[in-house]
Image (cartoon, rainbow, N blue to C red; front, side, top):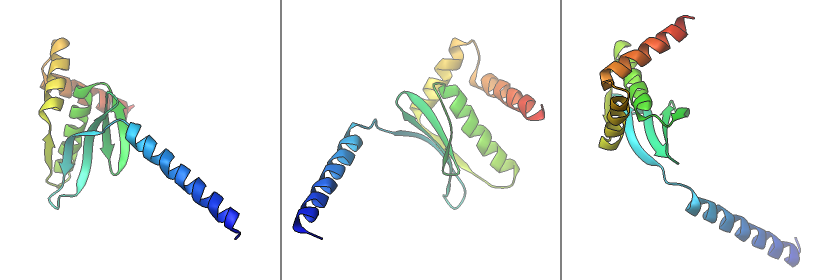
Length: 130
């Protein structure tokens, strides 16, 4: 490889690294808000907030995203209940911010969180059956 080629390659690598650093610096922060773990502390599901949306991750993949804190909290709770019914004890922890946002959201609709969660479970069961 010629000296000129090496110089160009090094310049290109520096530019790529600078672009990657700039992208990382301008990326919006990811705020963790909930995690569901098994007895070995393996992560089964999690909720983060990014760019104003709640993101639910399960099995290492994004399972969905929404503006609804109540929806995502109910979903991760249902995932925990499913694991428990299948014999896997789990531990769910979630932030006060997620809990408070979910409660405020359902109160605006005139519901309790438990009512919302039961309604969502019924809707999901109906979709599964059809």
